[in-house]
Image 1 (cartoon, rainbow, N blue to C red):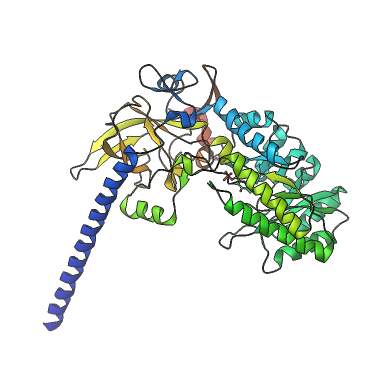
Image 2 (cartoon, rainbow, N blue to C red):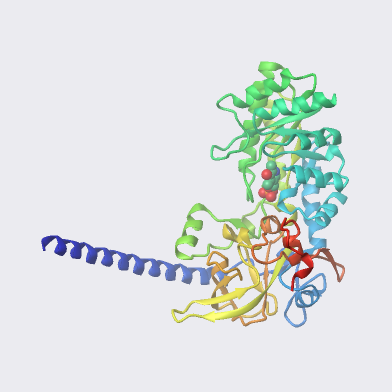
Length: 495
Ligand SMILES: *Cc1c(COP(=O)(O)O)cnc(C)c1O
């Protein structure tokens, strides 16, 4: 009897604690939602100029003179849209910044994984920008796109023999070694081809990362010496690091360059090695998105608190960003008695983030009794907007840019899982079925992370001078089954 009473007591206490927790969570959530309403109303991102977009006479969002609603009518929804003049503008900005600040022979190599769509890459290469590739596929694609070897850097984990052979044949700037065993593999392939190949090493300069070789433990130095021991076929030319993404200030790049140069100094003392290139990776930030901090990410997950929008003014201009890094590198070289190396940079986000946006259609709006509004759209986190999971992205009503944003929505995708959301607790104008949303900064990692989870991937169009060109067709059901090995499957039978 006493036992039953005790159990009952515990049950009641448990219930009380849980309901208190629930109450507190709801309170915190509603507090933050109020805050996010203020953040949204004061957001510095409600300015289409930031993406070189316009408003049509009817108040719709337009790009290079084309109404976004017409684009949806012509090409379907969802739709990825590239603003070509903005792409060229942003690419030239970082190109000019490097030319004016860095030693001549420094190079800019676009990170393919950021947005690996051939026509976009072609436009970037046409400006003289090279390729930073991280996989056998990306290397293959660079060759198809006729990128000269002396404008390609081959990074990535565990490179295959076949791709090493391709890299050697193409004469890439360097193959950057990520782990020790790669050295023998590259050596054997080079020896087999009887061709010498330039290699570099990637340094692991932040402790949390799985990439590169540790300096402290002596691993990086050991691998360099191993490479130098194979000098009949390998030539050590490059020290590489890539540590941050969407950096607003140059500070991390500067301190990592310092560590890399210190390493080069030590190597020079021990072996006499002179390194031709310092490859400082990518990670140059844009004004219009930000990575959520750990705290913001946690609050968003737990309580649905959308973080504060980034402030474009917090971003250092790319000229001053690069100028600071370069002058810091020059000072370090004096300190460490090194010749100033040629600089390689591998921007991804900086070049393509802002020139592309995603148009999605609101399929239906559900108002739940508890007050939650769901806007169900034809794209979400699990198909196209995965970066919105951990970054702040702006979204606009494309068919009513000026409308007041005073309704709270959970913007959802159309895949049947609760994990397919796009935004939680986002203030937007009142939505109705058929409305079009424009999700900004789709040009960094949207296509790359996209999936065909239950639905084929959408088309991509490029806009310039009042003309839209289809640069990737939407996938069809046939594409989704094209690789299936299934005896009775007849592709023509699909209804
Ligand atoms: C992803 C990546 C980049 C590009 O990073 P961004 O943050 O898009 O500029 C550059 N270099 C390497 C090695 C990468 O993996």
